Image 1: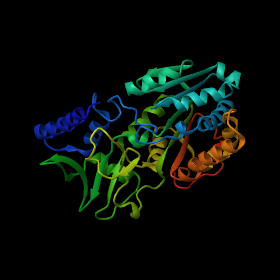
Image 2: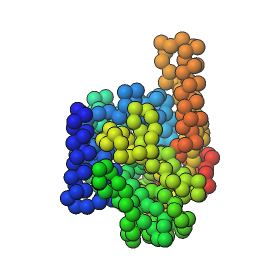
Image 3: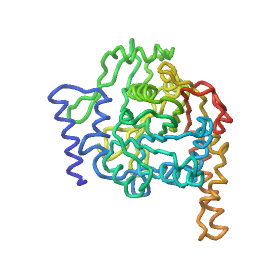
Length: 370
């Protein structure tokens, strides 16, 4: 995509504001990330990897997906070893799906009856996925296109990229709107009932001048999943907290990623940088329960992967062409990234529906608050 095209996205947003007035930050973020032709995730550039803006765990090693496959096998067992479905939201390059399927091939009874669905709204990502996912996979635009789901619905680094509302507590709760006057500006307007109800439901009282984000899209998302899941699990892997609204986060958690560098300005590199915010796992647990999902537990990525034998998977998936020293160094490096650098930052929330509360191996150590 040419630089002039990126300027065009900025101009499109500017003209929209000049025509209709200031727009909510949610709508601004939605345009930046998902504008039909010029958004960050829809413009034709692959944001993942060395030449992109960030790495994801599945792209670092197939052992990540193979470890998740161990948890899926246990879920299959608890479901009675019948036909099992995996529904993955936002599969990115397809690396996670490929490694999961590769690992499950060793379990022929499960693999033969396995159906794997990918819900992907990025045409670029769907094209990349189809290049190396040649069996078992069916692509869908939404979860309601999938027949009765018995199995596991899975997402990895999805919810943090839903467009969010930004709010500030003044004399009352205010919502951030984006205007334009020789550049993008911010203004505060009285928050609507949905935003006020969000904090009331969670029994959260924000202190004066507290800035934060509200991910209302995630609540719609989890309600849709609860309505569609017949029997099985929802596994959400993302970075965030069980109690997001702590005082030391009073300036919010919004972050932008551009060329593997982090900044906190969403009004730069429009259409060229990722915009994210931390996930409130307490909210997912709360609204999931209201929709019929029972929380199995919340843990961090480190404990989840260790409980399921990540290191053994790293050994099994190492290249036979590598010498022993190189292989050990690679295993140690990836272990450090997944378990230490990303291990506490990323969380794993598992919820269930129609199950009997069986103990999952990945949740051998759980965190409070979800």
